[in-house]
Length: 193
Image (cartoon, rainbow, N blue to C red; front, top):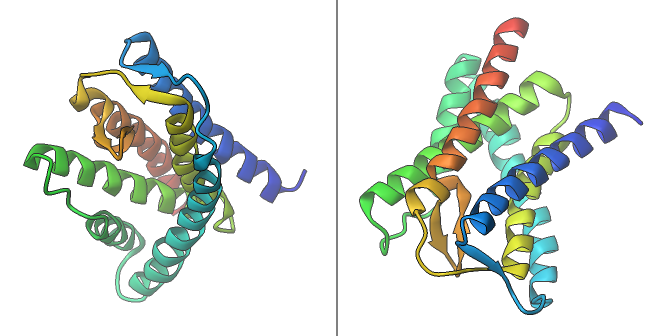
């Protein structure tokens, strides 16, 4: 296997494990249950959204914007500002509390930072970042097609409910996971720069 295939598969598998573990915590906590059948309408959404979001957002934020920012800023500053902009362009949910929206923005900031550090540190191309980002989005949609929220759950831990499912990026569990991934990438960045 080429480096491209290995790195692409590694990040896709990593995103799968993250969503699987998160889902298992919710299932064993009796906050999610399996639906009686698979909602096949989501299959097109899963493919389209995971591929489109993965490719479009990575090309826009981790390639174009980041490279433009690097013309004027140091690498670490460009990573930070790119991550802030990535977080800010995702809409503020007026139906949620201020705290929930802040947690979502923190999670998105950490996701943007991780995806950029992943590209810089490990790979000479954007495909692993596309794989991880698309994988996270796709696996959440896949979980949404077979699982349903079962009443109240600790949203601060697991994330807020969005479109009849839970977004893990806004929960403390997701934020902690992204923080850990960022720490590993930052350590690796310090070794290369």
